[in-house]
Amino acid sequence: MNPIYGLLIFVIITIISALIRSLYLIKFVYNKKIAIYKLANSYGCYIGPMIYIISVFFIALGPLSFKILNLNEFQYIIFNTIAGIGYGLIYPIWAPVTNSGEIIVVKRGNKAFAYVGKYMGRKFEVISMPSKEIATMVAKRFTGRCEFEVTVDDFQTR
Image 1 (tube, rainbow, N blue to C red):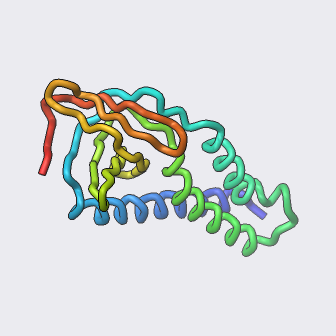
Image 2 (cartoon, one colour; image 1 turned 135 degrees about the vertical axis):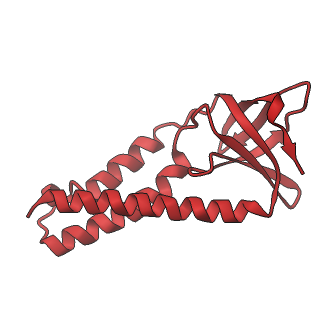
């Protein structure tokens, strides 16, 4: 059995899953956005060990499964397909925030939520919105509190 086939399938399915997730997020937030900001810097967005747990789990389930389990080629391809879909859909939720990109603010009910990054779409609950005087958005996610510094020139609100 050649592990290259499984690895290629894992990479291709991961990319397709991530693109499907990003298209869903773009379509989902398109009609509900109330503001778009350019992210300049972020503070306090520690992601913890979950990113490593997810990565190790899906790498073990997919590309390394031929060493861990006794699989035929068809089973190996199925495992890599499942791992690619899971990794492409779950990893972006826990991915670290990069200090570039966009913050899209969406209002749902009485709460506002910020999606950081068009393709990754990490979701944060907004605590305070930026203004012309204070160019910092404060948000929370799980138990952590994050501050997003945005560029004041790029305020686009509805």
